[in-house]
Structure formats: structure tokens, C-alpha cells
Image (cartoon, rainbow, N blue to C red; front, side, top):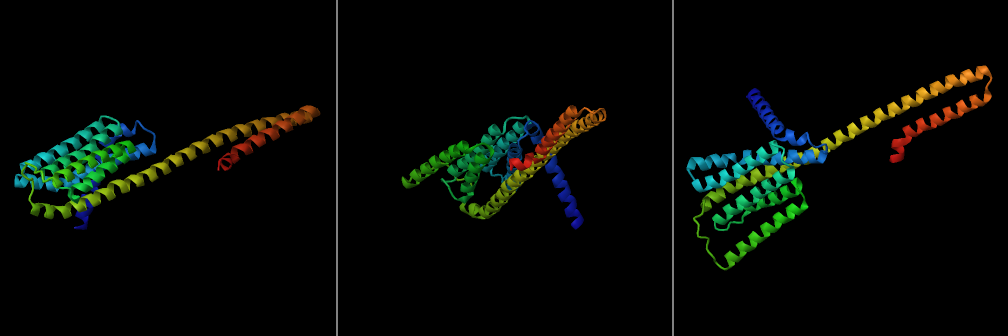
Length: 278
């Protein structure tokens, strides 16, 4: 049993890793920024795991032949598939992130409107995640714009509820369906948030550490190069000084010693460089 579980886990990791490399490779190879690479991976994780975690609902809708929800969920999946395709083609993270954030907000908003203006956590949490995705994947301005869209929709809902304006659409699910599926969706949203944004910050830390190590290696290589050059100069000057000493040329010997001292000071300056920066 344990062997089977390990094999399935290895297979799942391989499939995930292969899919991630296929989708994000084109974008990642064109940026050297650790933060930008983490944002690319975060957006992929959001789309991938969102689709994966809600797939049982999609198959359930197919099984019960709920065509209204099938169209809604199908549109949701189709737009996310478009986002992955655009990422694979190298479209900027700002464009893809905006489309993904709008999809996370607009499709649940349409479903909310069709279900008698339902603004329960079943829809409120995806709207919140949409604003967070806009902030992390694009910028603060995008998150604020999404927040304004959400605010206007909630104002519309409040107005229609207060004025008792009916939504002349049949609800896509019953109250029983809502209460049965809400706990499942809450767990999905919790796992999604922990997985996506937890790994996002871990990737930032890891990539920043990797960048710092590369810069340290480059600096060490530069120091070694400069010190090697200084030592070669000192070696040459010491030989010249020895020759001048043998010939009794004191003035040139003093000049050699002065230049040796100067080169030693330069070498010490190279070594003290990082301390000075601190």
C-alpha cells in the first residue's frame, strides 16, 4: 500500500513538474528577476491547482447533467486553459494575470447573479482571491480596480435585495446543494491559498538566496582575479628591486618598494571592499 502511494506521489510530482516547465519555461528564460520568476510560478500554481481541486465538482455536474452549471464551469476552465496557453507562448505575466484574476471574479459573479444574488462565502472567497491574485501577479492598481468592480456588484446586489427586485432566472442549484457543497469549497479554497501563496513566498526566499549566492560567487571570482593581478605585479616589482639592489641603484630600488607598497594597499582595499559596503 505504501509503495503504491509513493509511486502515485512520484508520478504526480513528475506530471506537475513537466507541466510547469512546459508552460513557464518560455517566460522564465526571458527574465533574470527572482521576484518575476516567483510570480510566474505562483500564477501557474494558482491556475493549475484551482482547476485540479474543483475538478470533482465539474465531473459531478456532468454526471447529474446540470447543463447550466456545466456551461459556467466549462467557461471557467476554458479561460484558464487560455491563460496557460498564453503563458506557454511567452505572453507577459501582467496580461495573463489580469485575465486569470478577471476570470476568478467575473464567472463566480455571473453564477452568483443567476443564483438569486447569492453573496455567501461560496462566492465571496473567490472574489477575495481574485483581488489577491491581481495584486501578487500584476500590481496594486489592478487589485484596486478589481476591488471597485466587486464593490459595484455588491452595491447592485444590495439595491436589488432592498427594492425586492427579482432575478428572472431559475437558480442553478437548490439550497440543499448549496449547503452540501459549501464545506467542500471552503476546504478547496483553504488548500489553494496555503499551497499557492505559501509556495510563492518560499520561492521568493529560495530564488533570492540563489541570486545572492551567484552574486557572491561572481564577487569572489572578481576578487581572485584582481588579487592575482596584484600579486603578479608585486612579484615583478620584487624581481626588479632585486636587480636594482644588485646593481646598486638605490633610487630605482626605493621606487620599486614604493610601488610594491601601493600595490599591497590596493590588494587590501579589494579585500576590505565587502566590509566597507556593510
